[in-house]
Amino acid sequence: MSSKPAPRGRAARLARLIPAGRARAARTPFVLLVVLLLGGGLLGLLVLNSALSEGSFELDDIQRRTKSLTDEEQALQRDIDAYSAPDALQRRARELGMVPGGDPAFLDPDGSVKGVPSAAPRSAALTGPRAPEALTAAPSTAPAATPSSTPSGTPVSPAATTPAPGGTLRSAPTIPTPGR
Image (tube, rainbow, N blue to C red; front, top):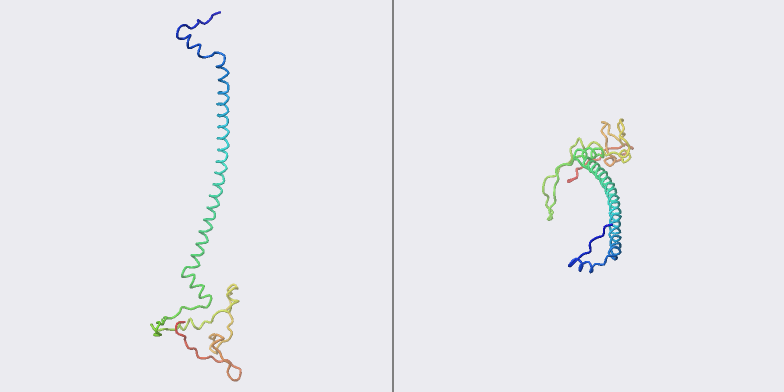
């Protein structure tokens, strides 16, 4: 058996300052504290990582939903642009019986007239407005019946006819209204 040589001199004095039996007992709580801190840190990181993953999935769902709503918005905007295009507006106005107006005239605050008004073109004015039920129904291939017609076959709007003696209808003279 080998025994350790006893410390001498300065080493012996330092050895007396450090107790030999209590060193192991004081080290145990420190080791437990370090292990608990490391375990708690790992559990905290695991919970944080799980929360970030869940937030990432929610963010992905929200981005996907935003993309679909943006696509829908763009499709609706294209529809609006198509309906508000000048040729589409002109086509729908003609379907409603509207015609391009003539030259406008303007009234000044003092009552003087600026410009020379003119009526709508004669060919466009001969076609009467459609009945309201014809606007909602699908257009048919057969010509629409007019409320009344003149002997020459041109349609006459009901407002422009007056009853004549004898029960026949005659056309009233039409005077173009300036600015319409």
